[in-house]
Amino acid sequence: MTTSIARSGISPQLSVAGESQQCINAVFESATELKHLFSLIGKSFDAVQLSHGRLRGNFKVANLGNIVLLELQTNQHLLLNGERGPDCMSFCLEASGRADECRLFNIPIAPFSLNGFRQGQIESHFQLSANTTTFLAILSTRRFNAFLSHCDSEYIIEKLENNNALQINPSLHADIRQKFQYLLEYQPHTPQQRRQTINHLYTTFLTAITDKSESKYLTFSPSPRQKLIREFVDWGFKNADQDFSLDQISESLFASRRTLIQGAKESFNMGPMEMMKRVRLEQVNWILRTPEARLEKNFRTISEIAQYYGFQSRGHFAKAYQQVFEESPSETWLKSAS
Image (tube, rainbow, N blue to C red; front, side):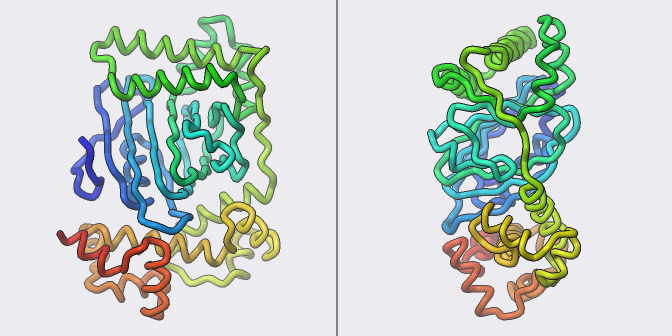
């Protein structure tokens, strides 16, 4: 199944702990569509498009039972911010050779690295660069630690609690990517095949994280300013329909204007107020794409939607919308109607 989520009718939620043989292969054309696709695998992320242009991406999932594999392709620069949930860790790799343009907690990821496996980490904040493919294996922390115990490798758990990235041999990086690609295309069918596949992947991850000669752990140490930016994005989505000044935002986050401005420019190449406008435009884009969302909030016109999210000037709103999404608000509305 390859479709836009707005018309997909996908309803079941995939679970890392589940045993169902469910898969998703869906096109997404907005960051918020991607947000809703992540909700199908139990992940709560807000998403915003940071670059200009029409978004075209693909979200492919294979549920192996105790591991969920994900391939994420995008032609635009995206930010995902939220929570990955308890009892969750992941092994994430960038497959397009553009690792330095992708970021975790506003820190560029290293070439040929596995990322996102820090145990006990609830928050998630990552940027996907334009024209990249990213693979993720999402695991239960509890079950993986049980596997480590079974292999007499419990000593490695402390490393997984204190680090969030690991630079590995390029050939091993390519081998893991190829395994992910194969399993996303050819899923095991029987419970025995799934168990064998999961054990094989666990062993592959264990090999990577215990290879002292080729692997290098990268300490997880985001600065206070980088942590502030994650909080700012979270605050922005929760208050997208409110009109706040920069001073009010800074006060709400217990930060100085200067720190917030510097952090936003370092992370997104735009100031905090421009970032807030981008978040509001993303909300508008979703409602224009989704008749059900308009019905829920009783919106009947584009102007009502724009004003609800703080755009009082119709001309300014239309220009800003066109610049980001390369289509007019009315074009988005008409496409949803058809």
